[in-house]
Length: 362
Image 1 (spheres, rainbow, N blue to C red):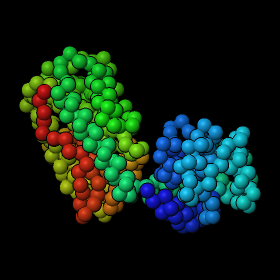
Image 2 (image 1 turned 90 degrees about the vertical axis):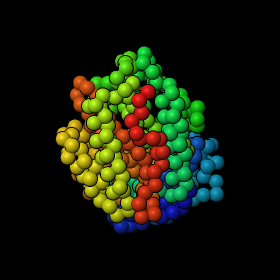
Image 3 (image 1 turned 60 degrees about the horizontal axis):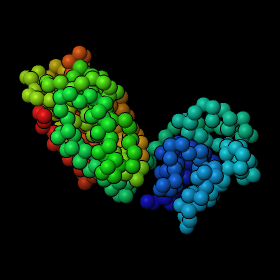
Image 4 (image 1 turned 180 degrees about the horizontal axis):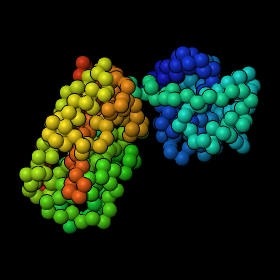
């Protein structure tokens, strides 16, 4: 991974925005800037301090040995917390003569307040300072996302054979997670969604005790993680033969999915991808049943830039990895969602999700 290039991109952004020093503490941004594999987890107490002349990664003694080993030969110095990490960062900034400091807008308010009280200069918030260039993936990042997508595809193949009437949503979700872990997923980027029958009308339904019955549509939304990078896919299957209405809904969502995918290419406004897919559902009288944006970026986070929705102001960039996931949700009846993960490249895109998209009747 091109850690030196990432640091330079951050410093370039800092120069453009007049930021002399920045403290980064969001977990995904820590992983991205340092490139430290097998060091940073969701529970880490850590931060990166970056100026035009300094790159220092701070953490506590639990992670210190692993960080020192990972940093060997690279651009990052390691600072080990003695008492309070953020007091020590502020002390170092004072020693450097820094008069202002930027923090990410995503940090908890308590952290912002504490640092503001400790730092003698001005503290400002900056939005998407790292996330802006994180959306353009390096080849090594794409390879990890593709490996995660392959695990998810294999898991779906297994689930088609596993699902049967009498199982609960929770049992299916457990099997789905176990299967992905067995095939090499290093944790879950999000809790799998298994939403059957009328529960499918809720886009982020939590798998529960509902028992699968013949005639159910089941929405399966899940992903794997490899080397810290996520995948994301959704398929909808039917237990038994689909009714005419179920098939009508499914065919409309599949058409919207394919229409949206056809618009995915570098330079295309994200709002246009959403509009084209949404128009398919509007034309079929289902527009009011599509209640979210058509997609989002995927990487170290399961949802990251860019956003593909009706209010998006961004455009697709070469080597971005995004989803296209239209859906329709009929309260009290069923839901249908079909989601593919693709990488923007070669004047168009390449699908990373390769599971079949015709309606599977189990």
